[in-house]
Amino acid sequence: MKIDWTKKARAGHKRAMAYATIMVSALLMTQPAEAGSISRIEASGSQITVAFDDVVEGASTFSLIGPDRIAIDVRGGKAGQGGYASGIVKSVRQGQYDPNTARIVFDLDRPAVITNGGFSQDGKSLKLSLQAVGEKQIALGRKSFLPPLEFRAEPPKTKYSVKVPLGKPRDSVSLPMIHGPNDPTRPLVVIDAGHGGHDPGAISPHGAAREKNVTLAIARAIRDRLVEGGRVRVALTRDSDEYLVLEERYGIARRLDADLFMSIHADAAGNETASGATVYTLSEVASDREAAKLAARENKANIINGINLGGATRDVSSILIDLTQRETMNVSADFAKLLHRESSRQMNFRKIPHRYASFVVLKAPDTPSVLFETGYLTNKDDVAFLNSRAGRAKVATGVASAIESHFARKLAMR
Image (cartoon, rainbow, N blue to C red; front, side, top):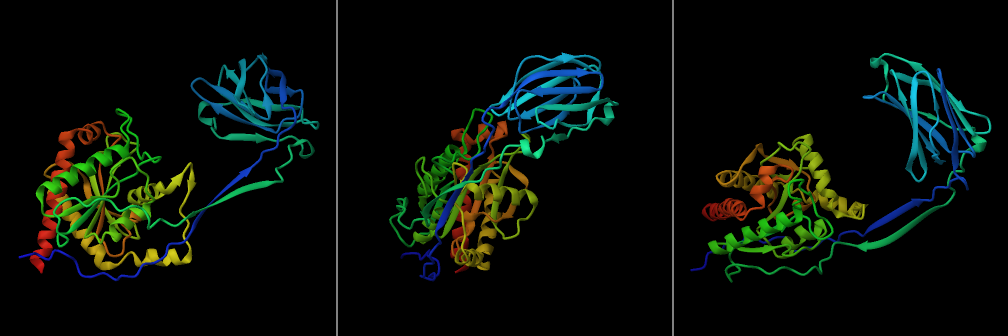
């Protein structure tokens, strides 16, 4: 006798996604025909004078401590050599900070700050007042100085833009192979390996592990463990180093009529002590600031060469609201708790293991979905665990146990 593992029939309608368009705007910066070279530097007593052989765009000063120094960045300037120093200033150095900026550094024999100053009327010299102060009086911000208006560089008058229609996430993306029993009544799980292709995700400082490779290895391990169990069918959104738009990832699950969708990731943090796994489910209001920041970062995965591909019309916005159907969210949350219970026997979790965030990949309206951050690539121990075959096997065992228990529970409820 066949067991009907399938879910209730879903609404069969499809909604069209809107066209996204990138606009790259480049401002062509105009500069003086000849940048002003530094011709003379004189620091004497409480005054600094910097002379140029042509007009520069402007200058800014800032203080440095340990040792005490004052620096001047000259925009539109070319560095020369040396300079005269006496009094508070012990020595003068200069160099080209970048093609359009010359930097002058004054080494001090005691703490001092720039109090005021300005350019000459012809814009070819800058005079600054220097005052000795106590260490606690040093301000680390910048002071800016501009030459008279008639000698400043003209602002750019021409803007250029390039528009490239990218189209909607494609329904034509090839559907992946379904592994496991050749029985359509068995539940189908879609495992999504995060990132891929030109998008490496997080990069570990310990061995330079890339998130896209770690997640693919874990996804394959989970697939193999589920196939071995023989209770469910399983498909991977990607089984190679391939890039997929976020909507295409959960779109594959919907087109396959999947019963569960899981996106695999590996986290990163500024603090190398942060470690452990976290399970995220959908919430339009993130459970905490950290979750909100993480969601914002992952949602930017639709970026190519720094240009965000995401652009939502009113129609798409309304669809995203529909995607937060309460029943699906509740099922997802229940599975997240089950995933923590089963996987915590195999791996470490964070103190708060289940969190909520507005990840794009969790927004399928009719497919229970979780995003599983399996650990931190910035943590040495987590990297060693996730990069090892034994570690991935433990992750796969915990995930498979949770998935099988989830569907067994659903069968028992029927």
